[in-house]
Structure formats: structure tokens, C-alpha cells
Length: 456
Image 1 (cartoon, one colour):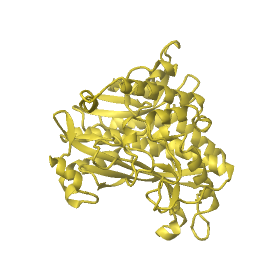
Image 2 (cartoon, one colour):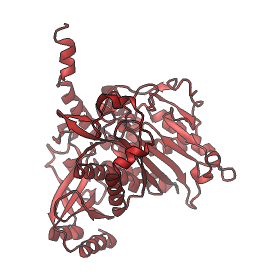
Image 3 (cartoon, one colour):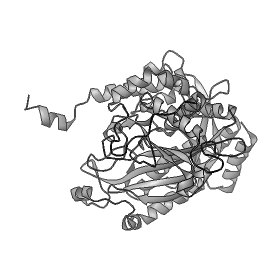
Image 4 (cartoon, one colour):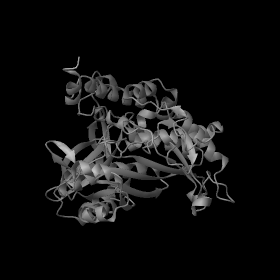
């Protein structure tokens, strides 16, 4: 482990002598937090030697059960990987009782390589391919979520407004922001403490829905970390303030869905954006090559953007959630929005691609990996995309999978997904999602009984 990481943890603990313990954790394929609680002394030992943790922690279903088909927990001896603290990601956990800190880990196998089933390691490998070409993605994200209260075991808007609130559009509502000012201030303060460059929160269309903006970084791995850590921060602090917070893609059937929009440009070794023309700042041919890769890969990689049963409730016409593999110039109805910095006022640095497919429930490492991997495939192929979509007919492109099982099957058979993530990680993701889906298919809910029990 690098000396600066060890020093960072030691310095943090030295600066906070009253810290009692440390939460050390990773994120699994589902995006759930998995890890261990450590005493202060044990945390210092982890800084020096790393923290052993079963590699099978990545291959669990949505309920935390091992996924046998992933081939990690059973018939292997369930070996450990070694988790080491990531520099600069130490902070107090304000929603926990006592003085508790957090340490976010990266997981390596016994050869020192990224753990093969770790989505974070998968993104790291994709970024190494960019680096081999002298390129660096510059990425920013917009992440949406809902606050709620529970009523009879079901989520309702936090202000108690009930059914009438579905008809209200609260986009950019100042009064809604003011009602939750203390929570929002705490979220931003906690984000900054752990190195997340969050620059604002806005009220979105749904009742109790908000969007977090995280400033661009020339470090896509850190940006994916930011998105995953942000979900943990929001949920923890919301509970501390007496609310629930959810990143479900569609928590209410009647209200707006929640997305994870990813903005990306690509710099060369001198820091110049290769997606923009050097003189005018307008989109360069390389940008359109990247768009071609995205459009081509999109139907096969949909599972990375919509990983859960609930994800697919978000995709409806006229909902700002794309239903086909298309792109457009400054077109928010398109899956891929091309932003021309020469027109937007930001010049060449602002020319970029906005990827609008992912739900807020997506694992950011998989979503960002699928996006950046497809962009690189397009750049390497050097082909042009189909014509941009007509905003009046946003569903005219190749249809995206609209059902979970179809998305799983397309991903499982995809050579494109295998090229982006490697066969092993692709197959682990598929095994986890197939186990999730099998559990959903075995469950019959109240609405289904109400509809069919006495009808048929």
C-alpha cells in the first residue's frame, strides 16, 4: 500500500483523537455497502496491512444472499481479497452515534490486481485503455433522489401532501428547497468533507425529488466513487433528519423517475478536449465516433444502466427517459445529448456528451464503464453515427430493451459487454441479476391478486 494512503489515514485519526471506530466498506454489484466495523487500533493495522474480505462479497443478490452461479462463494474455498483505504476518502459519519469515521476501500486479489468481480476494478481497467492511448475522460454527474416518509409501510411525499402532489411540478422550487435547507446544507457539508465536489442541489419535478450536481473531474474513477458515496451520504443524513431517501429509478408510478446523467469529454495528454474542434470549439469528428460507439452498444449494455426490476418503470415516451438508441444536438429527449460548447458559451472545454439513460439506481461503476467503454470502441472504430433523431419522434431509433429479462439476456450474450468489462465481470453481473429476477418472478403482489383472483 502506498505510503501517502497510510499517512492520510494516520493523519486523519491523529486529527480526530476521539474517534472510537471506523466503518471500512466497498460497494457490491447491486451498489449496496458491504464491509466491517473496526476499532481505532484495528483501523491503523488495516492502513498498514489491508483488510481481508471475501471476494464473494461482490456476488450477492439484492437481499445479500450469495449467488452460486457467479462461481465465487461455492466450490472455490471463498478466498479473500485485500481491501486498502483510498486516500482522501476519510471522514466522520455524522449520522452514526458516537465518534465514527469511514474508510472507503479498493479491493485487490492475491496478485495485487483489481478483484475480477469488483465493478470498480472493471472501470479502472477501462480507464487504463484510455491512458494507453494518451487519453483521459473528464466526467461529471447529475444524480436524482426522493425524500419520503413512510405511511402504512409505503413511501409518501415528505410534506404529507398526498395524492394531489402528483399533479404539481416542483422543478426549481425555491420553497421546496427552503423547507429542507438544514438537510441540504448537511449533505453538501458532508460531501465536501470527503472530497466530493458537489456544487449544488436543486428541486426536481416530483414531490420531494431533488438533483445533486457533482462538478467535472479528470478522474472518472473518482467521479464514480463520488456518485456511490453520495448515495450513502444522502440516505444516512436523511434518516438523521427523520426522512427516508431513495435512489429507486421510479419510486412512484405517477411521478417523475430519478436518473443518473453522466457528462463526458476526453482530454489528450496536453489537456485539450479531443471531442471539440481546436479552433471553433464545436464538436469534432472524434465526438461523433464516440456517439457511434454509444448508439451501437446501447441495446446490449442496457443492463448496466437499468439493473433492477424497478428500473424499467422509468422508460416511457415523453418522460425524459429514452426508449430508443438515438442521439441529438442539445436534445433532452435523446439517449445521447451532444452539447456544443461553442454555442453553450463554454468553448471547447464545454463540448461534451451527456448520457441520459441510467437510472439513479444504477451502479455508477458499471454505468460509467459501459458508457466510457462504448465511447472508446467508437473512437477506435472511427465510424460515424446514424443521423440525429427528430425531437418530434424520439422513439425512432433502435428500441432499447424495455423488460428486465430481455436486458439481462442481451447483456449475457453480448460480445460488446465482454470487451468492455471482460467476460468474468459480465458473467458475474448476469448471475446476480438473474437471481434477483427469479426471486421477483416467484413473488405475486397485492395488485396482481386484486386484478386477476376473481376475474379468471
